[in-house]
View 1: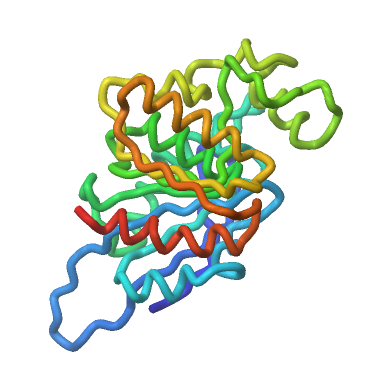
View 2: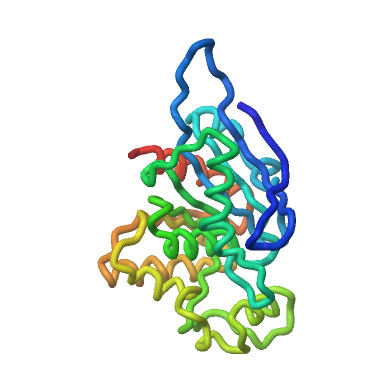
Length: 252
């Protein structure tokens, strides 16, 4: 298994962007290698593209299941298109997939291309997996922040960096002005959506985001997997569940 750190020249973001990749590398002489099933794995708020490698068993798990894992840098963008012309959504859902498929021996098969993330990255996985539903066949969201126009759990009046970022992403001081392409509850109503896996710890400060989404999906009779267990907003929780996510994803 090879672990690669590099940069991608992104037209969507108008600069070089760091990424990390885990790639199966043990190939016998004269062996024909099938393109690798691929997980695009997103980090959380105030983190970087190497976060999953530094804090979880993701290299071990990718090796065990013989999959490629691509981990981009999302900065604090929530992985959506921003008003300043930095199109993080297009970068994740289109450009990153196209470029890494050219760089590496990745499957171009819809059934073998997945997206997952934690916290802010969980939202990014939901938003981009649902929006680019012809690219990703499965989505996993761990301890996710779930932005929606009918938000009731979170108050934007408190002046902190995350609220400032959310206001910037929405383009308003209120959730109700959110565009539908950023509203997870609107996106899950699309005619065809990827398979969904949602998990959160019951002691997590944003536990209600995942629980409310689960209840809404159940009310709308939208098939999904929902798991909760004792746990906080922590790497221990995410390290435990990413193994379940991968095992679920490879069941094609």
